[in-house]
Amino acid sequence: MLAALVLAADQFTKHLALEGLPYQETVPVLGDVLVLYLTRNSGAAFSLGEGVTWIFTIVLSVVAVTIGYLTARRVRSRWWAVVLGLLLGGVLGNLADRLFREPGFAVGHVVDFIHTPWMMPAIYNVADIFIVTMMISVALLVMSGLQLDGTRERRTAKAEA
Image 1 (cartoon, rainbow, N blue to C red):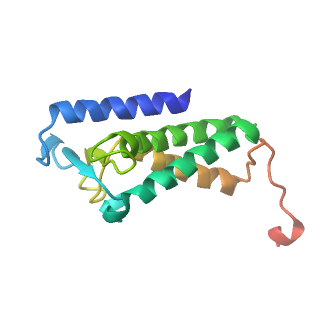
Image 2 (cartoon, rainbow, N blue to C red):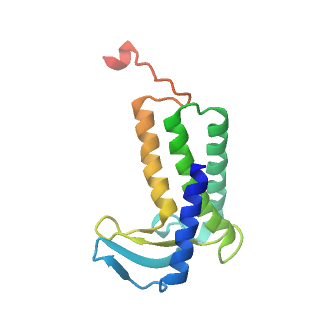
């Protein structure tokens, strides 16, 4: 359910951006704090790997299947279910672009339109926001010792010393 909500929000905001923003022109929203800048990204973060778009499609597909499997088979923790559901929605948002947007199936370019120049030089989208924040959440869950099944990892005497 959470994945579907994130996917819908991502695709809806991309639709609005494609319909309402000029291509590759700066549209200030809050000065230099928030700028809209519509572009298409054939690569990964910071346009890395532009010539191998199909690899990102495969990686996103494997990640989506892995999250689905873990959630269905191993996750019993509410925290893990929420984090993985939101992460899956972000992954599916960018995967949908790779599969169904121009220039063609499995090599589509991801629609990016959010720019925060004060924070980083990247231009990103709603799916990217969920991917990054949920990966941070995954790291926090792992560091806290919360297992997928909801149990806590026990510290041994050696680890405490």
